[in-house]
Every structure is written in structure tokens, then in C-alpha cells.
Amino acid sequence: MSRAVKDALERWQRGSRSVLSRVEVLALFPILVLCAYAAGGPTLVVAAAMVLPALLVVQNLGRPVRPGVFAPAPVTQGPTRSADRATVLAMLGRISAMPGLESACFVLRIDDWDRLERRLGAEAARDLLDECHARLCAALRGDDLVASLGPATFGVVLHPIAAARLRIRDAIADRLRAGLATPVAVGATSVRLTACVGHAALRNPGPSGKDAPDADAVLAGAFQALEEARGAGPDSVRSFVPGSPGRQRTQSQLSNEVAGALASGAILPWFQPQLDMRTGRVAGFEALARWQHPTLGVMTPGQFLPAVENAGRMEDLGTRIRQQALDALKAWDRRGHMDLTLSVNACGSELRSPGYAEQVAWDLDAADIAPERLIVEVLESVAADARDDAVMATLAALRSQGIGLDLDDFGVGQASLLSIRRFGVSRIKIDRSFVIGIDRDAEQQAMVGGIVSLGRKMGLDALAEGVETPEEQATLVELGCTYVQGFGLARPMALSDTFAWLETQGAGMPRSGAGRHLRPAE
Image 1 (cartoon, rainbow, N blue to C red):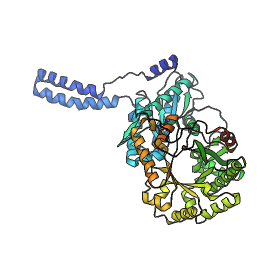
Image 2 (cartoon, one colour; image 1 turned 90 degrees about the vertical axis):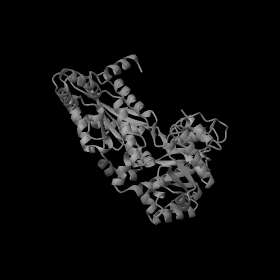
Image 3 (tube, rainbow, N blue to C red; image 1 turned 180 degrees about the horizontal axis):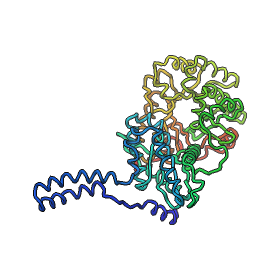
Image 4 (cartoon, rainbow, N blue to C red; image 1 turned 180 degrees about the vertical axis):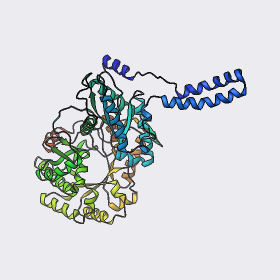
């Protein structure tokens, strides 16, 4: 960070207090009582005792708004989403009426929150959000605002400053992310958090106040930048660029575009490699849906799946991705890669459909692909309900055809060993939340080592997802994890990009049992 940015951040962070804190008021109490007793005896002592509560009340009324007290209750138990949104908009509106001053709005979303919440449970997740709120407050000045804008989503509005330049906004976004990066103790485990941040500037035109910025537009810009950051991957930051044509879409608008996108092929599979660490070679690919939107660019499932669900087209999406992915498998075969497997995701409604297993069998036959090369991924939350006879019948039918079954997000749901046995799972996928920072966390190493050992005893392979660093990969190899995938190895890519990747990959990949020593947990 440059010296100029550091100086600007220091000036931004400095703030003066015009009233006494609670601690200072309480510290004056013994002095007040002694003085009262010396001056007038017990009567004045009683009077002095009545003054203290009054001082505390006045102190709270006169105290400037601090980021931790924008609402009457903790983040997760306080105002509704609309109330907090209104709080953010109100502050942006007040600042927009201050000619010559600037501000910035940040929207921050904790990465992979849904998985983390399932892993920790609702109560621990609420406590973790409270801790996140406190850390964000600690990274800001006393007059800045922190508000909840939805599940694991926080809004930040800066108190007016002289100039909200891009480099200053980026530096503040880094401060917010750094405030969340320190591991959080949750029960007996340690959690490392990352977050994506989008930000937008609020710039006033000058003393006239003419054409003052619109608060709704500033907040919408920050949300738009957040979506772009999430599309770039975990722990990313993006700034809103005014004037970007057609970048904003509501989920309702997207829902109206789903059918056309499926029919035209705009929604299609991208592919992320899965490596066999025993050989250092690619074992197969997972097919992941992407929407190549004409104005929004390439969209990830987190950005458009709600629209697909609203349109009632989840099963159509699954069919389209599976059929196109099988075509990709044939394309790899023609280039000599005839030992690759293909993993596809199946949602709960697909698995509950009586005709799903038959449709998959038809697709395999039409593509002339052996069933053993297809793997269907089942969310642990679906497998946890062993009473779901429809799902159980579908999985049994898939298994009878020779199709493999992966248990996805293992470790964050409630699947029992009995349900794993009943469903005939052939591989467990260790959730990303167990993988982040595993090279520095002895507890995570113990947990993942236990999962791998359990799987081995049950005749199951283990695949770790979300691997992002060489250190994480080396640790997983040493723990005996058979397969890995993640951004650190290769990001999801279009089919056309997989051909060159397959020709060059595999050199120098570490293998299981290679004798590496684990780094001690920090």
C-alpha cells in the first residue's frame, strides 16, 4: 500500500469524541462521592448517587452513533432486512445532501455461508455473524455505519470524507476482509472466513447540490459490484463502474429469460478437473452450469439458480447440463482421453422424479457411454433423509445401472453412516469449509484425517473440494485424500479450453504417500 493511501486511511480513521465514555463516567463516581461526603455528609452522598444514572443517560443520548449500535439488537436478531436497508439508504440520503463531501457504500457477503451454516448449526452460525459484525465495526471509524442486509450480508456506509477515491475504497475493502480473516473459535473448531466485497462511491457535484446522487442507485451499484466479485471467486473485491450498460437484472427479469437461455444453449456446462493424487493425473471433470448472458457476461449458479427455481425449470436445467456434458465426454474420447469420468449434480426434485433414472440411462445409451463413467452427485442434505423413499428408489436404480454416486458437501449436513450405506455411495466429497487453511490448522487436519480414514474403512474414496493453495493440496495428499479439485488446481473452464489443459496437465503433481511433512498448525 502506498504512503499516500496509508496517510489517507489514517486521516479517515481518526475521529474525535465530544462526550465521555461509560468507563470515564464510572471512573468519576468514587471521586464524586468522596467530594460530596467531605462537603456535606450523607445527604450529599445520596444526591451524588442519583447523579450517576443521570450522567449515564445523558452520555448515551449525546453519544455519536457508532457502527455497533445502529440497531436496537444484534445483527441476527434485530431489524428486518427492509429496516436495515432503510437505515443504509437514510444515511446515504443525508450524505447526498451535503455538497462538496463524498462517501462510499460497501456490501460484503461471507463466502460459502450456506455450507458453513449447515456445518455449524443455526445457533453457532448466529453467534458467528455477531462476531463478524463486531469485527467489521472494529475496522471502521466511530461514525461509520454497519448494517445487516440479509443472510451473511453486511452493508457499510462511510461517514462523509473529502474524497472517496477508488484506491481508498479498495484499501478500506481490504481492511474489512482482513478483519474477518483471523480464525474464529466456534466451539471445539476454528473457522476461517473469506468474503466478497462490492463498493460504490457517493460523489456530490459541488456547492450547488444540483443533481445530487440517488441513494438507491449507490446501494444498487454496490450490490451489482458484489455480484461481479462473487462471480470472480471467493475473497474478491469489485468496484461499481457507473454507466455499464445493462448490467443490472432482478431475479424476476432473469426468470423470464431462463426458457430462452436453455433453448438457445446460453446455459451450458463448464468443467472443473478432479485429480487422482495417487497418480497425479486427471481422473475426470465435474460439470458446472454457467449462463453466458448477453449483457451480464458469464454467470455462476449462485447468480442465476434462484431465477431457474422461480421459473420452475430446475429439472430442465439438469437434463440440459447432463446431455451437453455427455457430449463433452465423447469429445474427450475422440482426442484419446477415454478413461475420464464425468460428475453431474442432481437436485432433490430430480431425484424424487420417478423417471429420472430411466432418463439418465437413455442419455447414456444415446451417447454410447458406459454407465461406470458417469457419477451423480447427491447433496448430503438429501441423503440425510433416509425416509425419502422416492430418492432411495432413484439412487438404487442408478446404482444398479453401474452409475457412481458422490455424497456432496460431506461434513456439513446430517447424513448418518446408515444412510450412506443404504444409498450405496461410492465416494464422499469433503466440503470446502474443512479445506480452507487446513495446512495451518491441526484441528482441521484431524477432522479431515478422520473422514478419510472412515471412508477408507467403509470402502469409500474421498475427494476434497475447494483446494486453493499448494500447501492445502500437499496437506490433503499427506492425509491420504484420494482426489482433489479446486481453483488452486484449475478453475472451471469451457469445453474448448479443456483440450489444451488436458494436453499439458499432470506434470509434477504431488502424489499420496509422497513423504511430505505437514506444516505445524499456526
